[in-house]
Image 1 (cartoon, rainbow, N blue to C red):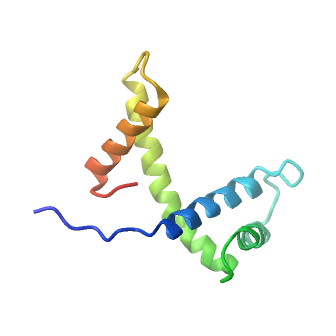
Image 2: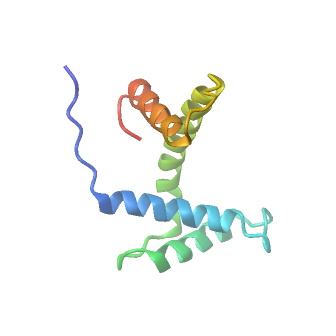
Amino acid sequence: MQRKQKPRRIFADIKDINLAKSWVSISTDPITGNGQKGDTFWDRIAQDFNKHSTPSPRSAQSLMNWWSSLHAKISKFCGHHADIMQLNPSGKMMDKIIDDALELYKEIEGSSF
């Protein structure tokens, strides 16, 4: 019997995307580079995230905890994507490769990405 998943709200998905965008933006900042201390790094992410998010601001600590959960899922998806790419799907469109990686993720992890 397959478990019934709770439907995720689109709002939550948008927040996940906004957190990922903030993380990428701050972590790839060419001016500060990778010389940022952890607290400063997460404070900057919180500032960027809260500027683009809903009226309820999140603390740096809250975002750091949220990111660790999100990052684990992203890493697993990247691994499944790499597995699909190793099959050398010559001529396959990138959309189909991503669909295959999403399907593999769901099959192995037991939930959607």
